[in-house]
Length: 291
Ligand code: ZN
Image (spheres, rainbow, N blue to C red):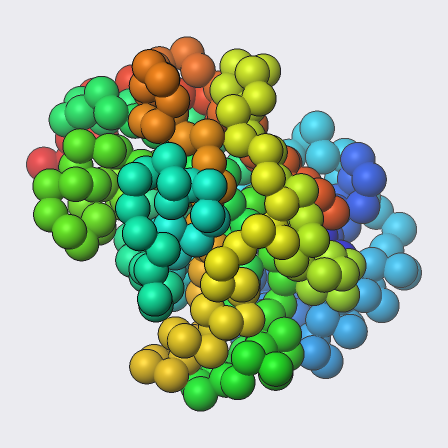
């Protein structure tokens, strides 16, 4: 199933996309939570109820008539992995790490699958990173690699948008990875049962129609399940947590000469069996100053 968060007729809620239409769960299964983290937290019985409601639904909304939001509007945690494809490590001139290079993106950086990414007032060093993201479906701790698939609700596309000069102000990466709008997610959560092997998916990124990144998740150094084992050794993972697994070669900063993003550019990222997201770059609006 394609679990989506959408806005229609002035309210934002969850639904299931099928083809060019969406089944509104607020109408088809009103007893279920209308927010994605709560829906995931409700567990497998709730998702089975969603499947039955979708099969029985008579009214469907054309996707052209609604706005798809990030499937999880405010993930409890967004964790990401740096240096997780050999070709990206080589282009970055770094050593292959012994442990996953984990950093956080702030939950306020999330934006929708087709919403604009802001070119910050503070920097012109804006870059894209096409990535496979996974969504945690069950509260868990100390998950062994062999059982990690059981805690994954599904997968989505992540653009780990990065502000390169701010990223390298300090070794922690956090500032350059967390500007507002710099975490497009979506277009939906493809439930794990429909993805098959998450480590055999082609991943491609285009800027203005020009292919910039082309790889496959089989090239991941630490795969999704190894990352879950590593993270959950230290802390609890919760329904709705997003983990982005890293980007392959072809980021703008490593091109010769570098090709950073400018206003007017459009970034499209496609993951096999999951879908694609497409985000235009616009100057950071004046109204982003709120104090
Ligand atoms: Zn990244």
